[in-house]
Amino acid sequence: MEIKSAEFTISNSSVEKCPDTQAPEYAFIGRSNVGKSSLINMLTNNKKLAKTSATPGKTLLINHFLINQEWYLVDLPGYGYAKRSKKEQDKLQHIISSYILRREQMTNLFVLIDSRHEPQKIDLEFIEWLGENGIPFSIVFTKADKSKTSKLKTNIFSYLKKLKEQWEELPPHFITSSEDRTGRTELLDYIEHINKSL
Ligand code: GDP
Image 1 (spheres, helix red, strand yellow):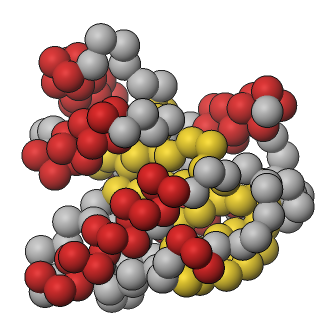
Image 2: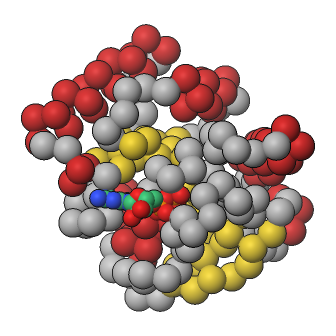
């Protein structure tokens, strides 16, 4: 898929205020600092579309970006930021879960995982929760450029092996780097393929 246009539409803190359209939505989520903003900017060829972590974990907003006048890319708030108050964490959980469970336009959720790290409990629990609720999702490994190829392969293999303990069938996965644009074509083609099948 070619990106012809990418426009910021709206930021809000509740699913009720999301755009009132039927366009398909592809949402992106992950732990704070996983590289979500960088990935969104890389995908859309716009260095400033999503704000990269100036204040990590501070945004509790759902951001909609209209792509090619056809579909929305949705930037969900990052989870797992340690310095959040309990009240903020509860609010965050509410925003995330109500969007994911109630937004019928959400066609696929991309769950971002830092390719350098061992499987983290918070991500595995989140993925399990997606499964329990029948949410369509894919895994996006980020920051692939930061590891040597052999190490990257080992990390991803062990991650998928861990997921295999929970899942009979693995979700689709993508290996990306916002630095060298690895995985961009694959991810955009995947979205295009789903759009065409709707
Ligand atoms: P977010 O909090 O998930 O939105 O993460 P950001 O996109 O703000 O990225 C967090 C940090 O990781 C920043 O310092 C980025 O420059 C860096 N980063 C993000 N993606 C990549 C990547 O693909 N490769 C490298 N080397 N660094 C990255």
